[in-house]
Length: 306
Ligand SMILES: Nc1ncnc2c1ncn2[C@@H]1O[C@H](COP(=O)(O)OP(=O)(O)O)[C@@H](O)[C@H]1O
Ligand SMILES: [Mg+2]
Image: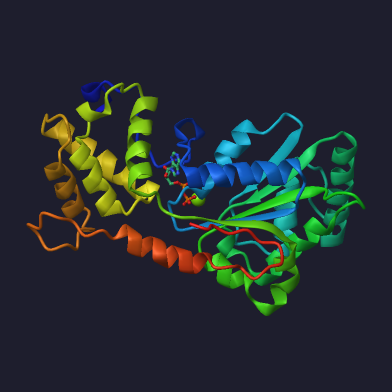
């Protein structure tokens, strides 16, 4: 709608996890490289956690778009599944014929598939999104999948993405064996102030904007950070609404006034009105995140250290 007004080739702030827009913040990049390494080196399990809109799915989609040709990836997003349904879904995603019969039968078909792939030098990766919804029973089943291995290496690499509740789920005593299987775990924190500003400018550049200052003033970008605390999804929602308001008001560049107006409309703005200086909430937020990020209680776990 406002594309022409700003001269964009596309809408810059959609909320889909589109790899074309991937911004390599240091954290997102670290997670991406960690995933890459874990897959290449056949490390087994990786867990990625973060709040809604932190960029978990985007990192994985970006990973999928870059993996070498000899990798087969399946992404499962429906996580309200019984163990048998999960296996059936995995088979379907990998295009494996046997989809009926007992769970045992399905598992043996899957094992057969994995051995074939190993022989063909194909690396098999299973990504499970929204993993916080999985029951402990289904998580155990996933661990059993990862048990399929030869003496030398894992036959399947499994990546779990989930909101922070996944951590408490994994801490259930009956998932002890599962925890021991995790090679790496990451927590994606919100973007810091500088990354948030660069993120906005990056997305504008992807749609052909050479001079982001002509779209958002630097102060407006600061205000977006303050209102969103650096969560990419919120930044997108804010920027999109602000661009629409600017278009409706025929006003360029977007100023702090418009950002504050958007904040009021979104009812996310709990600050007293007419304050000049917006309190720095991000430090507090990252302290909480760090608390959540504390060791997930596994032998070989790597967590965010920021
Ligand atoms: N590093 C990034 N680069 C570009 N866009 C991002 C990045 N991280 C998050 N986003 C954007 O933020 C929104 C939410 O990201 P998403 O991956 O769906 O979050 P999550 O899966 O953690 O809930 C999407 O629009 C996505 O494109
Ligand atoms: Mg997601």
